[in-house]
Image 1 (cartoon, one colour):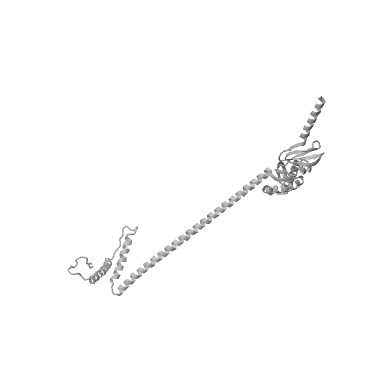
Image 2: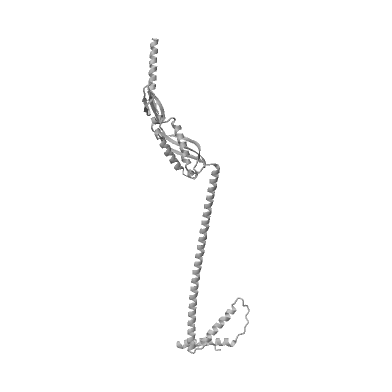
Length: 326
């Protein structure tokens, strides 16, 4: 009985081992390759799978999710002989598990070396200025080259990104000085443009002011000319009336104008600010004659008014208001 028990226990143990060897649980995001006697036969997808114990075995366990590889820093010589240090990152995804397992040894290392080599090739064919300003173009060219090279491995390279580009310190200082000079140049140009615009606006304002002043002087001159014209017309009418009076034999009109101008001249002399005391000989007979002429004119005017308006009945003639004769 003792030997039989051992045999049963051995069978049970063998059965458990066979079950464990035959049942495989593949986690999500992974694929397992199955090898029979060392040859690839099929691929196990996520979930529960069975294989033949002792005949089949799991060959490779591949991660089918998108993976990332850090590209270490390396020195690159550009086309214009500038030394820069570059690093980056690459993203890839396994699409065909058998090809990724059996077409290349150490897939991640192969992708890394291929990426580093093509970084030197692509960036070495560009000038430094283009290298610093066209990073998207560099990424696109790297992705195209590396993806084509890894297509036969059953891998899809999704992205390649350049993280840092570090030029030499002296080159960075030179670029900083160049950028500062460019900014100073733009600032000087803007300042000159501002001063130019200010001068133009000031000249335009002065021009408008001169135009308005000229228009004002023109309007004033026009008004002065109009006033002088009206004054001349009034003088002409007055002269015409005096001429008519003289022609009709009324000589007193001349005496009136002479006396009026004479008195006006004396008034102007008396009101002058630089004349406090005025001593001058006067011909009394001339002044008296002028005043007499004025009185005669007034007497004739009053006499004509009295003759034109008859006195009402019962009124007495006025004693006052007569013009004295001189």
